[in-house]
Length: 300
Image (cartoon, rainbow, N blue to C red; front, side, top):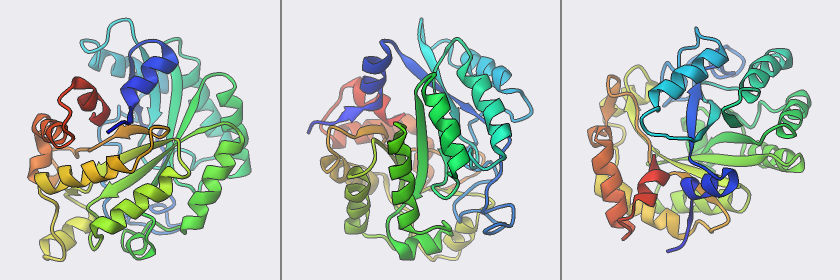
């Protein structure tokens, strides 16, 4: 089974070990500020999927320096990607975005920036800014699609149609932006064939893919449904088997940025096995019949 891991891709592109530093830019989301809703997506934590980001009370440069200290023991003579992760990182006046993004991209240890956002928050002014930034250092845009299936998208309160994602990818590719697409594995009501359809669909469009385990966090509407018995989460063996089937249909041209994911342990309700990251990675390695460290690095 041949596939391209993020670790391999980054080393080839930048010539050294590259580590992501999660940044909280202090943004919100149209699913939270009343534009589309106030409760966020059904699975979204209070941190807007940025539970492991640095504190939004710090300036971007300070967050980068804090992040460097956190991973100092793991990386020698390497560089960093500033990952704007929490909430929707293009959902603000373009002047605000420009200030924060330029502060990150001008940092001497930053080789690229990665911007997590929604496909419906990429107006022409934002695209022009991303184009400008991409001429300075590489820009990755990470789109939270989660699923291609309308019934599931409605349940999770995604708030936009699949066609919006398609247009966003097209617009980003026109200005040379590398697109990474997020999918959640194990969404309520989705079958194995539904999941594989989503993977195949995005792989015809995206440059990179992130496969994220559905985990249930305290304080989310998903937690209420889980406690009400409306769905069950995957077992570790089920998840590993699904990952194998997903990887089998991902072409080498699409970089695998992530094979799993974990929520903050203080808020984790289910599946509890996801809190043991080492065991999860080892199980995925075994399922892929590949015990080399490269899989571990791809899954982190």
